[in-house]
Image (cartoon, rainbow, N blue to C red; front, side, top):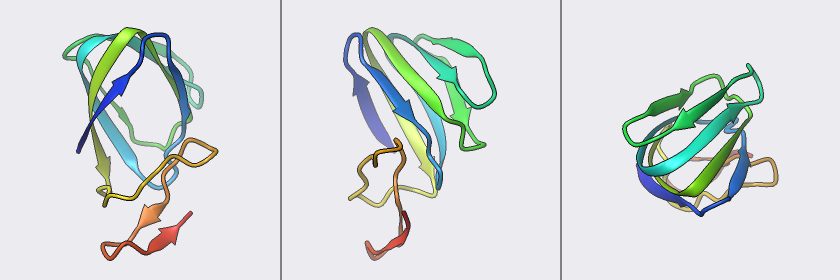
Length: 99
């Protein structure tokens, strides 16, 4: 689980190929655009969404937004977004299983 802050006006293009992502908005306002299945949804405090089919998406913040994110399988620590907006899949010992 991690807390993420999206800066005002920031847009993040992501697609988690190896993880399911569940997110709840804690503060601020923004939107998520599902580029795989279509649709754009407003995010405000209390709104929860799940990217459970590895959808390509764009996360946008209006004036700054704080999110609580849970990934399955769980993140182990060294993950960093690659050029496609995804995380590699790590084993518990820190070795990469899939890029």
